[in-house]
Length: 221
Ligand code: XBP
Ligand code: MG
Image 1 (cartoon, rainbow, N blue to C red):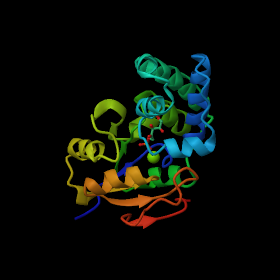
Image 2 (image 1 turned 90 degrees about the vertical axis):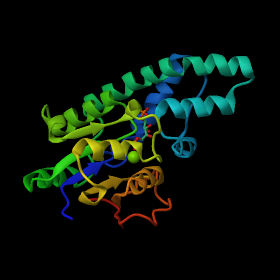
Image 3 (image 1 turned 135 degrees about the vertical axis):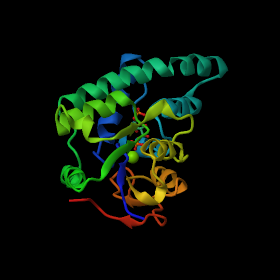
Image 4 (image 1 turned 180 degrees about the vertical axis):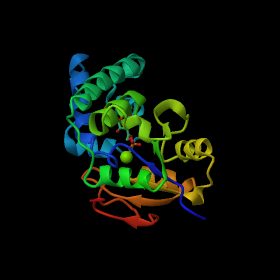
């Protein structure tokens, strides 16, 4: 089978974004006077939970003092996450987060050889729009035939749903595409969807079990 499309994860793969996410989470927690601060060590652990809303809810379960406080905080999660997304997308829109080394060249070379590009991410659409526009210009989003992300699927990574949605939308069998990921959760999702996967770990994901990757590289540059 010929490869007809490249499917990219966003956070950690297209760009090393998690420090910017971490700072945005902490700014939102401060805005809501929660007294929470996620340091790098704790955030690295929390990244095992994919999805920002799910990550905050997971943290609430750990720190809530009792049932009523837990319910009160869980009810606040969507608003806290919306505030976090405002902070994060404004930093990215201002050019605060570059693409990872070699990524822009790969994207342009792939398009030049008539491969289609797609995105399969857990983050929110507004974050992806901000990143692609800030790093690839006003037509950046148009480089991708499919952008599948966030709450478009019920089950987030490591479930294969987001990759299956991309393949279905592209009208391709898994054998006709290659996935690019940075994390164990992302690799599990791509492999479960039948995709041969390249993994380029970051500080946040290095040391994971990438045995089922087709190829593990420190970077694409
Ligand atoms: C990584 C994630 C996301 C980000 C935070 O997504 O799990 O939750 O950490 O972004 P990817 P949100 O699949 O692109 O690696 O707060 O928007 O979820
Ligand atoms: Mg990722």
